Amino acid sequence: MDHSVQSLLIGLDVGGSSTELLAVEHHPQRSPVRLVGPGANLQRVGFEQTVAVLQEVIERALRHFPEASVLSVCAGIAGCGRPKDQELLARRLQQVLGDGGRSVQVRVVHDAEIALEAAFKGDSGVVVVAGTGSVILARTRQGQIEVVGGWGYLLGDEGSGFAIARAGLQAVTHAMDGGPPTRLRELLAERFLLSERDALIHRVYQEHWPLQEFAPVVLEAARDGDPIAQQIVEDQVARLVEQVSWLLGRLKGEVAPRMALAGGLMNEPFYVSCLREQLVRRWPGWSIEVQQQRPVEGALRLARRLLKANVGSECDD
Figure 1 (cartoon, rainbow, N blue to C red):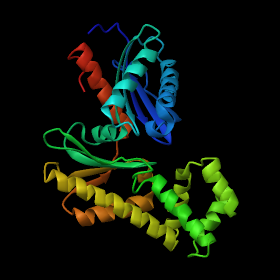
Figure 2 (cartoon, rainbow, N blue to C red):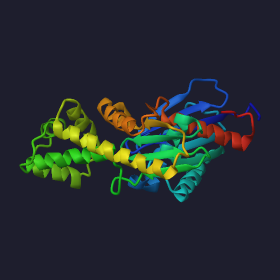
Figure 3 (cartoon, rainbow, N blue to C red):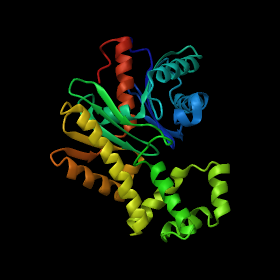
Figure 4 (spheres, helix red, strand yellow):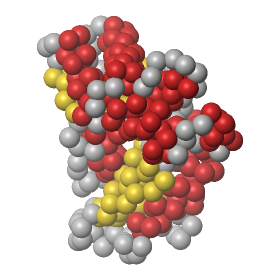
């Protein structure tokens, strides 16, 4: 490979709430660049908005590397599990990023796949992802990727921030109607100035409030001992664990006995405690740990492999 060519590796973790970018030169001359942008779940915001979000954050990164003439980009995108969607997005990004005469290669995968790569570096294992949405991925010992969940907020996303928030808001509406009292009602009024029925309905249905914003409040109430909030978290975690059991039952021992926990909810101690407790009880002999390496690191690894595949063997992992 000609070392005079300035090659830039870019990894992106594109979730429902935010996008994280990590960019580094193939032969590093300067520090990596980390940036954060808006979220862009493909199924929620659509094709054009997803492209716009990615283009904007990538172009911000390129200002730090103006000499880069070769780009190798991997984007793990929430809501982008269909190969056809991945191909269309990759082609469009390649087109818009190559307008300046650069050589551009783009690979698009589901965001859970970059978490799997970050956790196990291409080896077998299971990753449980719970953030705004939820999905479970496994790589078998033969290298095949299997998925459970990832159906989105209307059909699934059990154990996710969206599901926890929705259940929390439902508990508030029940309390308003005379059902069991919960501190969630008081916290909703304090944090979001929503204490009346009409105001809550308007915020949700007319202003299209991102419900996942209420999830940290539900987790805080659970941590502080509110029984309704605790039951919500435990129920949602149980649904996620049930999906893990479906996946492992399907694979029948064809996956290494290790599990990584990834996604934004893994920053919430009460949630992680509930999840690990239930998983360890079901699979006591497994290694079950919160993922230490961020999923965007997995995207960067895949970007490096993409560069290697296109320019030769000097681009080792």
